[in-house]
Image (cartoon, rainbow over all chains, first blue to last red; front, side, top):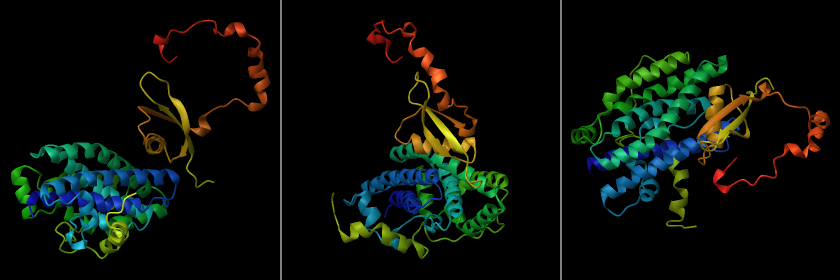
Length: 250
Length: 94
């Protein structure tokens, strides 16, 4: 498996898995306006998935399509960060997860606009506009709920405490990242951490939330070695139709 | 009702040169979120280049029961309507 293919899977699986998670809110969000906003975010992420996995399939050159990669791989072949596969729980928890991902996503895409691979740069430029809005929206919501009522503050703090151990994985680098960084395709994710911490610190200060001290990080998503138990259940729902009715058309 | 976010009226400018038009309303906790919600609810099919929101409570409206005194007197004054001009096509939208 080439390093470029692996990198494209990591980008595409992040957006695919988070996109599906966010889409689970469709018809269930607390108010109509948020329902539509979340559906828009989910659609943006799925659209980005088509580009990342489409390019991954092309780079792999084995005749697979983006759909094959999305619907016909099992858990161990997924390369998304653990953060993106965690269940939605409540609305505040979903928006906290979104913010923690969006902040990383925007920094990463900004850097990928300068990728030595023009195809990667083109996808990044298109996605960056969408993701800049995602970040604005999720940051505002985290601040609004964190600095809101006693109940919303408590829920946001507990969401941050629960999700914080999943942040570190987004900044880990392995040999795949080193190879791609050498080629100028991508940057070493660890380079993004300082900027990320600044963004998160500013938003959490406005939200009157306390960032946990621990830097402990769950890992195993982006190299597929140990996903959480949640991903399999999610894939069972997401992949049901193409697995039950392979090549169905309508 | 006190737990409900206030109602905002949304106005969208469809393209440069046109005026903002009322497109509907939505709920939001503040003006910033109202604009974000308007973006998500009313411009997802590329409808707009500019958004205005105004809290519905801040709109003063004429009363339907006074429509007689307000509007009827102008009905009989046809000379106020320049309907006898032909507008050249090149003028475009007016």
